[in-house]
Image 1 (cartoon, rainbow over the protein chains, first blue to last red):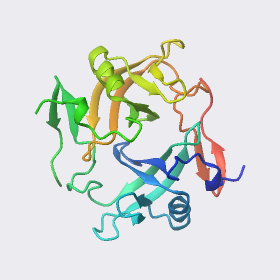
Image 2 (cartoon, helix red, strand yellow):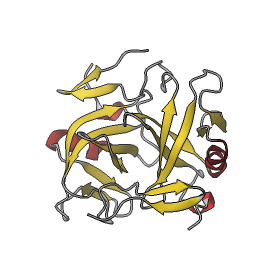
Image 3 (cartoon, each protein chain N blue to C red):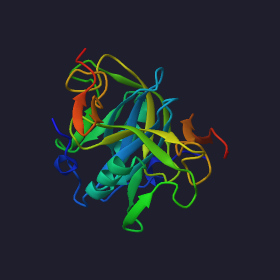
Image 4 (spheres, rainbow over the protein chains, first blue to last red):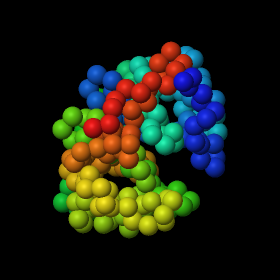
Length: 118
Length: 118
């Protein structure tokens, strides 16, 4: 069956969450939002393009930082309301310069930083 | 610093997305939502407890199916608005009886089912 981005389930703001996972290592790098247009653009170009909720604009990942994310394969979940993108990531995915945004663990009730900036 | 679930950034419905990842294999199993109370309960009990948006009730994963998810480690992202739970999963995570909810890939513009029910 043809994949039609318009048939996914978007929230009231027209957005769908997209998890970016390192294709090679399985590390979960980040979660950000897409709308139908940014998803279509991602599939067309192979460059991960989110929708910035703060700027209300396309967010071509790495466009200014150079930390580009290339799409290896897009997957969609059983409810058609969440995306999982397998990617290759140049350098850090996180704006703190860490590889992954999920660098804070909860251990014994404390916030523990478990990775350093690259 | 102490981890305080009330200091995370919830959406207007009081919810935060939580990605469940297989602790051992790195496979992304599912994404579901938590509120502050279900997160606190998850941390207290070690049993992954989401918030069901359709039922507006706690959703203790596997309570009826037996396909329990145990928390190994909770992580939070740089913006405090997304959770990543490393888990052990009994059997399938997906209601279709597949290990992961992300069993549909987009390949050459087509939806391709890439895994079978267990």
